[in-house]
Length: 207
Image (cartoon, rainbow, N blue to C red; front, side, top):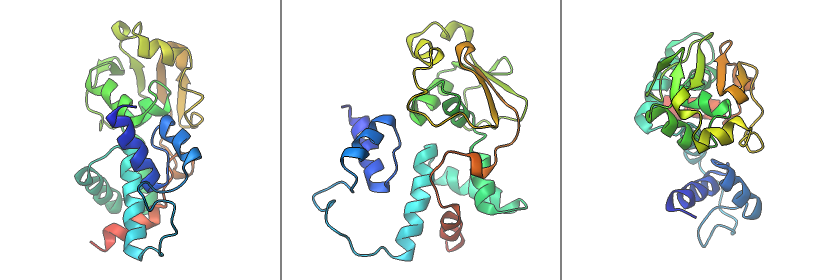
């Protein structure tokens, strides 16, 4: 296992959520925190620790830095409606998130890599910013020159569909053509992210 895989697996065990397909398999075998005291019963976490862990879960699932998540939270807080729902719904329109949901990539890290390495087009134009906000109606697809490479051939054959959540209703995907369209804004209940968003709101509200 590579050091990156070990790191993701250890983080997954610490947070109690699978961040990669490989980490999901490890969690099934070792459903406890890493380290020599991982199996022992721990004392109850403080309210702060619970909120912090939930914030870290959200960060990890989208692969964000603290500054990025704080900016996203502030934007969500300024909008009408439930701040936690607004936050997840906005994060879900990131280009790297939708590349993953569409099944073009196997993990968040791979999805980000595909975008940064200029393999992904939006409405026919290369976009190399993972944080790019996709608007309803826009078409996400793989650059023609990249379609024949092994990672995308695997994706086009549906090679990731067995380890990813079902494609959500806000996306229309033609996996064999390596293209997907955001048909409408995501709704929190549809987004396959494990997070108690109210705890994230409470964490930032106290800072």
